[in-house]
Structures are given as C-alpha cells and as structure tokens.
Image (cartoon, rainbow, N blue to C red):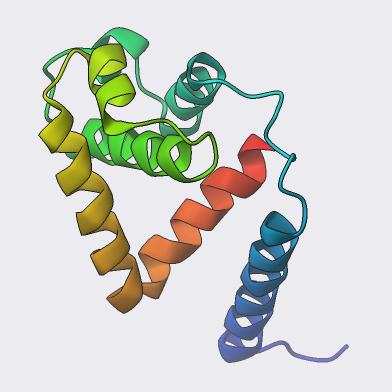
Amino acid sequence: MPVVTKAQIEKLKEIRLDITEILLDIDEHKFDFLNIDVVTDYACEHFNIYKDDLLGKNRKAEIVQARIFIAKFCRKELKMSTTELAKYFDKEHSNFVTLCKRLDENMTVDRGLKREYIEFIANLI
C-alpha cells in the first residue's frame, strides 16, 4: 500500500480549497436561500457557541472570529451593508468596516485563516 506524505495531504487540501473558491464564483444566485439568521445559526453550530454570546458583548476569540466570518460573508455574498450588520448585532457600523478589512488583510498572509473561511462557506452551502 502506498504511503501518503503530509505534504501530499496538504497539497490535496489546497486543491480542494481552490476548487471550492472557483465553484463559489460560478453561480451568483447560489446564496439566494440564505439570510443573516441562517448564517448566524450555522456559525453558532460551526464554532460551537451560543447565539446569545454571538449577539452579545462577549469578546472571546472564537466569538469574535464567528462575528467576523458572518460579517464578511454577509457583506460579500448577501450584499448587506455595515449599517444592516450593526443593527443586527447591536454594534457600531464602524466595527464591521474594520472587521471585514482586517479579515481581508489577514487572509492575504495567513493561508490557514483563508482555508478556514472557505471551509466555513463550503459547509454552509
């Protein structure tokens, strides 16, 4: 039986992510069935957190990351404004401008974070 190296496994993961990114770009109506409530419920399940914590003042790392992923997804795919996000989360809209910008910057240098975000989306749909 052939031995599979860690490098080969990582390469396959990268190929899977590249394919997922391509598929996400193909159909502009792929998320028509989603709204922020569905995305939020999924994020709670994905990150194993409570919705009250997500919508509240909690600043634990996994809660903040879930908010960032939700904000990025809703801005890009559901075309929500930062004002709409702020109203939903009862926060200042500038928080969401900063969060989305910071996530974009971090994903350019951190492939692991980008992979996690793409997997978040892939599992959502």
